Length: 437
Image (tube, rainbow, N blue to C red; front, side, top):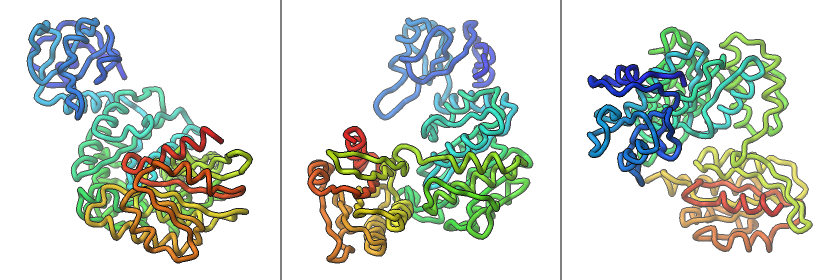
């Protein structure tokens, strides 16, 4: 971030007092990472309240803190008081973004956001220095953090945005003020909170509301409620572009993984490159060399006690359409051995949960999977759809699954692991296998 004086910070936050003079080079919400050049913002979290650490950071030499109330025992000139420290973080992030002179691309979607973001970063880096959100810092804290960490020397910046409720992306995009906004897809992720797929589409489409004047909107024409995405985009964008099976940039793509969803990621990236007016040759080369990310479909060739097994680690997340796509891709693979799916529950589906798990079971039955292992109570609805010739196992938790795999895995097997990351914990099985192999 750019350096800020204490007086400038007060001005940005609308604080009428006169703080002690200080030159701030870093903004932190983590008391452990604060030093004599840091502005510490006290946020209230689920486990900790940053206000409890204000006196500690001041003793460490932090020159200035942002708090929602006066702090007993603290020098009042070193405390800026605001009504909402989270909103204060956002204001500072927005100010920093407005100093950025490059092109900022914001993206969201129900599935594949992080993969598309990384693919965009890799591709745009072939043309000029490119900054992107670190990891999946895409929420109400992560997006401001990403904007504060912007590389002012980068020509392109890619900011990922996530949400679980209406209004969240509207706020995040208002901070980012993107030049280009992209929606990759609309799936029933977080439907427990948003109640309908249409609401999810409207929540994703909020990203267009933050576009700078004359900005560009891009959306997936083949996704659910694409018409809502287009209609909302037309309200805010200077130009609107769609991509999909019938409308994508003609290019000689030879992806490392031929699964359909990876083509959609590639088409999204190519559309961004195209609207930016960049030559496509470098983009095609970058996309063709791009591989799946850890936990998001990356293939690992393992040697487990002499048995050669291909692990498809897609364990970072699990939602219905992404689950079906992964199963379809497994079914279409040319393999020398058996196809095994180890699937955990899908989360945040509310009343749609039983139907969603049942539909995934039907996908398993239709795609020639040889063995299915279900983890968590909800996967019983998947298993109930399997024909008799498909071997099935059920576990209420991941305990015991490793033992089973040791017993059933054979040479040349291909194993897909996918499920809700925190709810099912199947990612731990993938990690253990990778460690051993």
